[in-house]
Structure formats: C-alpha cells, structure tokens
Amino acid sequence: MLLRTKLHGKTYEFPDIRILMGKANEEKSGDHLAGVAADTVAERVAARLVLAEVPLKVLRETPAIPYDQDEITRVIQDAVDDNIYNELKDKTVGEFREWILADTTTPDMIRRASNGLTAEMIAGVTKLMSNMDLMYAAKKIPVIAYCNNTIGAPGTLSSRLQPNHPTDSPEGIRAEIYEGLAFGSGDSVIGINPVDDSYGSVARLLDMTYDVIKTWNIPTQNCVLAHVTTQMKCLESGSPVGLVFQSIAGSQKGNDSFGISVGLLDEAYALARKHCFPKGPNFMYFETGQGSALSADAHNGWDQLTLEARNYGFAKRYSPFQVNTVVGFIGPEYLYDARQIQRAGLEDHFMGKLTGIPMGVDACYTNHARADQNAIENLAVMLTAGGCNYFMGLPMGDDSMLSYQSTSYHDTASLRQLFNLRPAAEFEKWLESIGIMKNGALTEKAGDASFFLKR
Image (cartoon, rainbow, N blue to C red; front, side, top):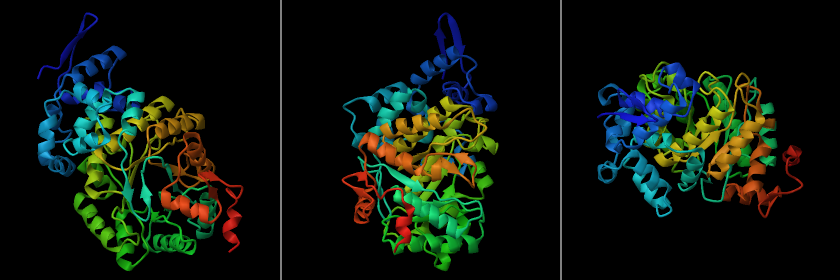
C-alpha cells in the first residue's frame, strides 16, 4: 500500500504502517526516544492525512508484533468477533472517526463495534482525534462493572482510596483510610501499594482493610497491589481479597519484565472468581501507562500509544472491575510535560472505553516532570467531562511512599460538586447512613476522620 501525500507542495512518504502510526501521534518524548516521532508539525499532519485514508483492515493485518511471536497479539486477535469486524473492516480510519463522533451513533452501537476491533485499529482512530473529540467520544461510552458495588454508571464519579504508607504501618494506613472515607473516597476500592511484597505483610494489610470494611458495613472492596503471585497465595490461604491486581504491558516481552504471562493471569482470574469475598462478577484490577513497554525495550519499534492500546485489549480478557492508566508516573522520558501528560490521559481513557473496559485515570506527575498540581487538576476536569469512572484519592494528593503527586480525597469531592455527580449508588447510601453525605452533598461531618474512632 502506497502511504504518500502531498502537502503545500512537499511530498511525504512513509515506508510502512509502523512509521506512519508513530508520526501521526501527538508529540511525545517517548516517541522521540523510540525514533518514530514526526520531525515537524507538517510531517505529523501529513501522516494523519495518510492514516485517515487507511482501511481499518490494514491495521488489523499489521499488528505491532506478529501473531506467531507474541501472546498478547494472539489474545487480542482471537477475541475479535469476525462478523462485526467484517461490517467495519472496509471503513477508513477517518470514516470510523466520523462514525464514532456522529450524533446518530449510539453508545450501544459503539459498544457492539468494540467487539470487532483490535488494539491497532483503536490506536489508529485515537491519533486522529482532538482533545475535545476524545472527551466527547469517551463520554458516549459508559462502561459499568460490578464487584461489591457498581462502578461507571452515568451520573457517578468514584475514587480509589489510596492510603499508602512508607513503612506499611497498619495504624498509619487505617488513619488514612478513615480520612479518605470521611471525604467520600473509597467507592472504587481501598487499594494499598505495599512497600513489603511478602505474603505475611500483604495478608496482614488485607485483614486490616477487610476489618474496616466489615466493621463499618462499607459497600466497597479492598486490594493490596502486590505482585499477582503474592495475591494468589493470599487467596489460596483464605485471606479476604476484594480485587486481584496486576500491572500489565502491551507485549509478551513487556509482561515478561513484570513476571507475568497470559497463563498466570488466567490462573489468577480463576482463583479470584472462586475466592474473592465480593459478589462480583468483576474481580480484576489492572494498571497501565504509556511508555511501559518502551522502558522495558519491549515495544518492537512501535509508538507508545499503540502499545498502550494493546494493554486494554489484553485487560478485556479478564472482565475487570477497573483499569487505570497511571498517566504521568513513568516520567518525562516518555511524557515530558503537562501538555503531553494531559493528551496521554485523554487518549488512554478514550481507548479503554472504546475497548469496552471500565476505565479510570491516575491523573498524576513525578516531581522531575514539567508539570504541576494545576495541570493535573485541569486534566481531572477534562476527564470528568469525558465520563471518567474514577480517580485516585491520596492524602493531600501526595503519595508519601511512591513519591509522586496525584489527586486528593477532596479533589474527587470537588469534581462531584462541579459536575453534579454522585459516588457509586451503594456507597452514597452508606455515606448518608453515617451522616457524611446528604442529598448528594457532603455534610459538616465530612473530612473529620475522628468520627470513625468514636464507635
């Protein structure tokens, strides 16, 4: 296929789909690092003009890593509903973009189409979207999931209560949990990133968080974000696990660097369905982020957006309760500044929703990136307008264990007020029962964690 166009008297020709896809991206420092970024704005525009005319079937036939070399490619390709794919395959990428954005295209129509797409097809259309396109399109695709409560229902915004502690102190973590609950955070999950990944430490934190949930009859779930093998041991030993977590990559080589495989996650999924304490049926939690495959030299020469789209195709295999991109966490080598972080957050959220998974975003940055808290608040506002399922809730937005900046407990409360949104329905009912929320607004009791010490 000839990948060529003429723009203002200059001819631009791209040798293959891999290079075309990279050069069609919005500028990312990671794509420069990988050697696939456009050299000029004009070249980027030319790449998009060419990509817009590429039939979707070409992107399915050109996976980032060949089918016989990569199990993630096989997972994604084998999951495609060929009847739906055959209805879409002759549309160009540009026509598919117009179809998604059209007023006559309903959420149900988009959700059905998602079953006929591969990650590369989703990545291709994302590259043609403006920021507002990404917000508008994602808003059209609510994805609802169920564990011990409901996430993603229209009109709601949830929060992961993230009470990390630099020494895994159960007393310190419990205090952070109470503070988060007092602000209405925690309806997506009470999820701890542990310092100590050992079975004994992880089991202790699972017991403690489960005790809080049961003592206060909270309709939520817990998770300790240790390596999946540690969580599997906890499940097999009878520990109270709400969600099973793992970071994932968009290539087999990338997952090798995480110490996981499709077979291992299949086993973890089976254990979760058998042993997790909530009613389900969605029990898995995944985190991703643009640049993770590149950082492991596992991108096969492709751009980071396309590899990120493959994460979501992989995650879909396990019907997760929640997925989030930790969008600014990997660092400025991959997303250099606030503009790149904001763009990637909007891209990732849209790609997850178009894939058909319940998607949140950790709107965050590291202290050596050219970003600040105002930039992250801007991203959170844009994502909320686009129907994001949930954000992180950290004490004052500062993670004392992982040493990065994110959204706080009160940020989600503010976003709910700004957009007239509610917590998960079951969680709001509980907040009302203990007097922290009334008629969708926090009461004067909100924010006072000592409330939980008086029983």
